[in-house]
Length: 88
Image (tube, rainbow, N blue to C red):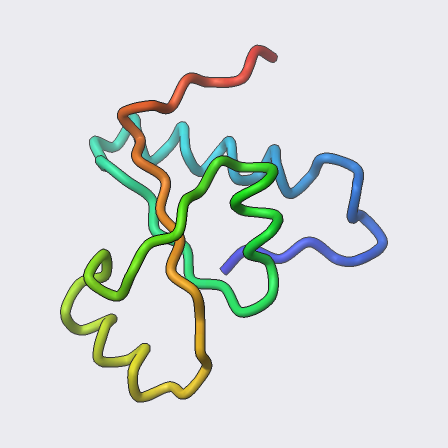
């Protein structure tokens, strides 16, 4: 789970955190990141480059959990093949 307290919104902390996760995932050999969100779709798509995904992007067990949760989460994906680290 990723969460940034409202006091820190708009200061770049969330974007930096997601950039760190992208870098670590790519270093570990992952091909894509998948995010489930009920409230922050705009942040992930607008600020972090994620795209609309579907339940098919999830492992089978997680798909079952999503269906039974009733949370109506959106699935977003980021293909790590197009990841280029931000300059520091």
